[in-house]
Length: 337
Ligand code: SF4
Image 1 (cartoon, protein in one colour):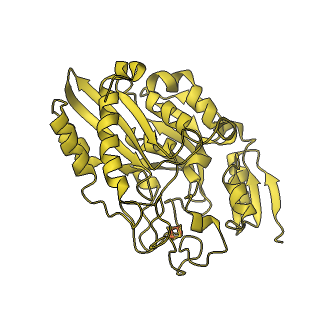
Image 2 (cartoon, helix red, strand yellow):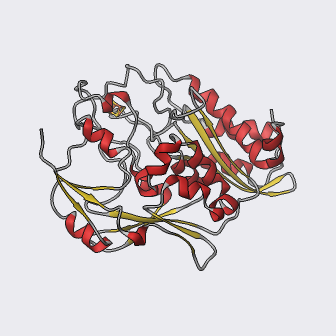
């Protein structure tokens, strides 16, 4: 058994100081990290508990009309916050689609960004082959059980997917991640925060060693009237997405002024469907346009042996989600095919 030391930080400066010790990890809600530690996947030698840093636990409006969500805000508190429900309903929906009520009550916004893939080979240390756990060992999922794995942006080193629902909505909303660390404060555009696996699948994010997420900033709300998050999963509750879609639209009648579309369950990071967004912008929504956009979004898909179904599933999910975003009344009545 490996000995672990533990300390509780009272402020950001204290947390960053403590993290200078090699082998340190920050712990917030612990809903993912403790599982990983119990399974021997993560083996920190020092834990810095950041849950008492009050400055990280608030939701505040920004001068430009946007919103700052502290890294320690619980997922359930964010999902049910009046400003998020009314100005960023897409984010509220995505948060409520994730995990279970008990987990959402514990999990933090910062921790949600840092959760690791649910690839079964990654979690089970009995399998030797996992480049994410042990760089250079191989990838057991390639040619193995890969029904849940990536169809976009994968590499020969890793085909895992990012499991976060919240992050899919944040990608569509063009959020910004605020971090503090040994080199000071900086911001990271959301699309640059999570990585594709490439030849370093052990790295999930672009955080530098010792950096701490302090908040997520949302730009002024443009899409509150027309957005929707759709999660398709094997069972109705507490399951990770086979495919999910976050769609946010600005509409002028039936014409799309601008569109933001992100996919979950398909890649190592939340996947922005930029080609589909461009095809929709300036066009009237119709079945032909929607199908063309959905086809464009999956044009580069490279499915694995057991997840070819995800390509068509994602295309259909895109069409349905955009229809639901464009027709919010239909969500209430169940009237969109
Ligand atoms: Fe490991 Fe990634 Fe392969 Fe899963 S897909 S076994 S996480 S290298």
